[in-house]
Image 1 (cartoon, rainbow, N blue to C red):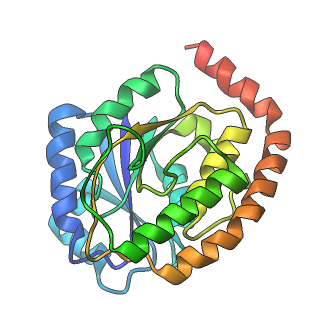
Image 2 (tube, rainbow, N blue to C red; image 1 turned 90 degrees about the vertical axis):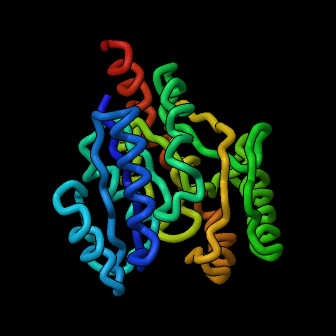
Length: 251
C-alpha cells in the first residue's frame, strides 16, 4: 500500500527541513512506495519556499489559502493524499518517523486508525513539556474521557495513521478547525463504526511548539459540541459502516 506522509505546517521554516530529511531517509529505506505532502496553513515565514528550494517536486505542497487551523489542514491532507494510508505527523517530529513501523501491522490487521499515545504502557517521553502545558493536557484528556469517549488515553499526540478510504466519508461531518480537531476525528470515526486503536510511542517535547494555551482553553468548550456532532454523524453514516466493511472484505 502506498503511504502519504502528510505534515501540516504553519511558520515552520526554521525546523521543517531536518524533519523532512529524516522522513525521506526512513521512508526510502523501509517503505519506498510513499509520497510526502506538506499542507501549508497560511505561513508567513516562507515555509513553502524553504521546502521547495530544498526538495523541489519531491515534496507535494498544498496551500490552505490562509491560516485555517490544523483540523482544516487535516481534511485537506486526506483529500489531497494519493496514498492508501495517510500518516498525519507534526512538523517537529516529536514522535519519530520510525514509530510508523509499529503501526502498519495494525492496519494490516484490520484497524482503520492507529493513534500514537504518550499515555499508555510502553510509551516513553524523552523530554517533558513545561508543567503548565503538561497539566493542561492531562486535564483536557480527562475531560475528553468524561465527556466524549472513555477508552482513549491520549487524543492529542501529533502522530496518527489513517486508512484513507475509511476516513474520506467522515470529512463532511468534521467541523473543528483548531486544537480539538483530533477528538472530533476520533469520535466521529468511532460513531461511524471504524476500528481504532492506540499504541505507545516515543515523544520529545519541542521547545518551539506553536500550540498556544488560549487555543487549548477554547478546545475545552468544543467537547460538548463534538459529542453531539459524533452522535449525529453516527446516525447519518450507518450505511457507510457496511460499505467500508464490504469493500474491505472484497479485496
